[in-house]
Structures are given as C-alpha cells and as structure tokens.
Length: 140
Image 1 (cartoon, rainbow, N blue to C red):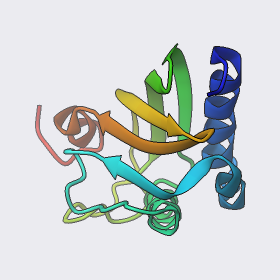
Image 2 (cartoon, rainbow, N blue to C red):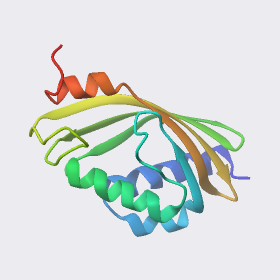
Image 3 (tube, rainbow, N blue to C red):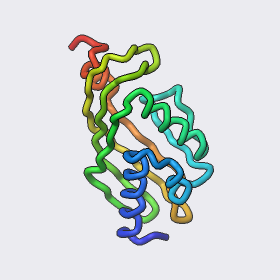
Image 4 (cartoon, rainbow, N blue to C red):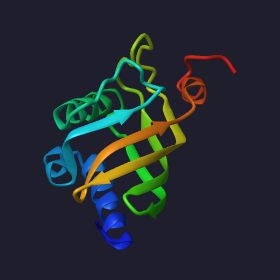
C-alpha cells in the first residue's frame, strides 16, 4: 500500500498527465482494467485504460484548453477523496449541444480506489445544469 504522501504524488501525476495531454504517462499510474463511474456522462463507458484515453482525447477535442485543478486530496488507506475544478472553452460539439465558444468553470468531486499502487476505479460527480448554463445551452 502506498503512503499518504505517495498517494498524493500519484494523484498529482494523474492531474499533470491530463492537463499536459501526456496520455502515455497514464500507463504507469492507471490500472489496465480501470473503471470510471459517472452519472453525469452515462454514455461514456470506461472499463479499461484504452477507453479512458479515448474519453480524455474526446474531452480535449470538445474543450481543447481544458484544465483540471485538484484542490483537495484526502487519503484514507486505498481510497482517495478529491475536490477539483474543471475549466475550459467549448470548441466542439458535446453530445446534442453544438460548440458555443464559451468558457465554463465548475467544481466536481471524486472518490478513487487504488490497487497495487495504481488508480483502479473511481466515482465522479458534478452539476451538469450549471455547466450547460455557463455554456449558453440553458436559460437561467
């Protein structure tokens, strides 16, 4: 099992790999059979590392300037709680929502499970309505 400091370092490496679009770096920190659970994106299935990379590539095609900032990382054994901020400009179509060129910034929460020193599973949630309002898809 990783120490809390090693776990926080692992999460910072994950954050950097996503923000710097270095998806090959994920091989060292994400389990090959990783599972991502997210009610906010029901059509996006992630049950392995290749699907995760595809999901992140798609996300970067819709929000090419996206950045995730991990605000709080809380470690409890092999579980990690995370509060973070996502920000980016919608330059591509997002499901039925056409590109608006508008910027959105929102907070989200995650819980991760680690296994053998890698991210093996996680649950993530955010407020889709707030995001869609910021992007101009909903009146509010």
